[in-house]
Length: 68
Image 1 (cartoon, one colour):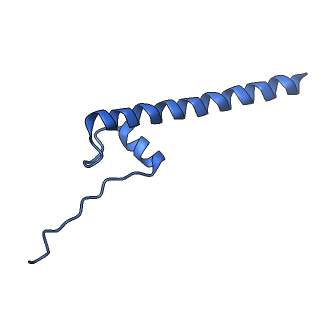
Image 2: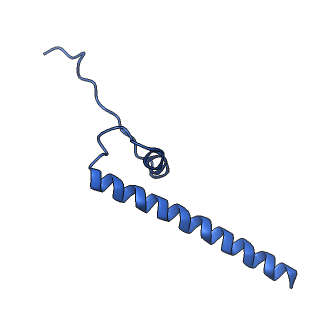
Image 3: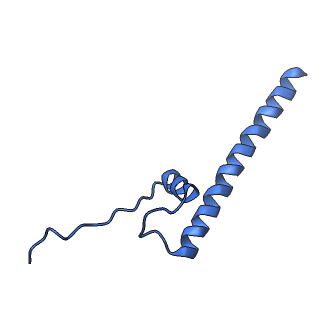
């Protein structure tokens, strides 16, 4: 019976973590879409974390050294 309660608690904690991560990522994606800010550096920790989780990053191409 103790194993059942421990397994249930483990499942509930795991589900809570997964739902929490999905919620934070969803919040961050909506913030990025609303601000149209994928072309700039991340403004805060939530945005940086979401970009790290989703694998997105901001890289600006530097064409200043090119001569035409």
